Length: 247
Image (cartoon, rainbow, N blue to C red; front, side):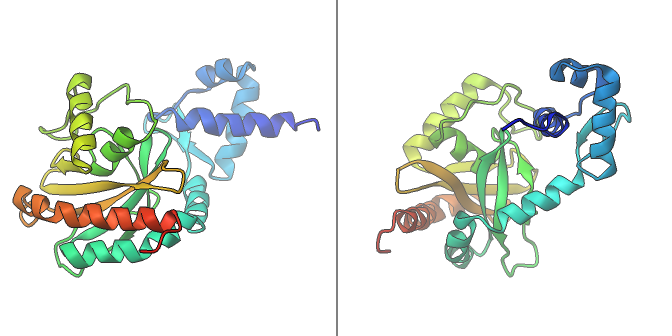
C-alpha cells in the first residue's frame, strides 16, 4: 500500500524533534527530510497549528508541542504495566511514607507513567508523562544498569552532585547492578533523594523501574539503606506478578 507522503513526512518531523531537546530549525529539518525549506516550513506550520509542535525559547526553532503530551498521557493510562503496578506503588508508600513512582525508557530518558502520593505535607511529586534524565535519577540509573539502552552522550549537570563523567557513571552502574538498587543522592534536585529497583517481565526483560522519592531531610542515607531490602522485595513482587507467578 502506497504511503501518504505528507503524512509520513509529518510523522518523521515528530521523530526528529523528539531527539532534539533544544529544538530544530527549518533549514536543518529540511536537510534531514531531504526536502526544500518551503516544504519543511509548510509541514511545520500545519503541525504548529494543531499543537503537535511549538516554537522553542529562541523563537527560531521548534520542539514537540502540548498535543503530544495529551496523547502520550492517553496512551500511558492504557498501559498494562501501569495498572499492574498500582498495588505495589501503594506498598512502597506504606513502607516508606514517601511518594512512589514508576518509569519506563522513552526517547533516551525516564518517562514517569504513574505515581502515588504520600500523606506527608512535605513530599516529592512528579507529573505523569514527565521525562527525566537517566544519568542522575534513581529510576534512570536502573534503566541504564539493567536495560539494553545506550549511555547518554551528554551528562548535563543539575546539582553539584550530578555525575558528569562517563567513566564515573559506568562505575556507578556496576554498583547498581551489584546492589540491585539505585540511588539519586541529590543529583537531579537539591534536597531530594530517591531509591529505585528494576522491574522484569516473564522474559526476564527489563520493562521499567519503580521506587520512592523524598526530601533529603527525612530520607537520609541511613533510611535508604534500611528501606532498600523492602523496596527490592516489592520490586521483585511486581516482577513476579508480571511473570504470572503467585505473589
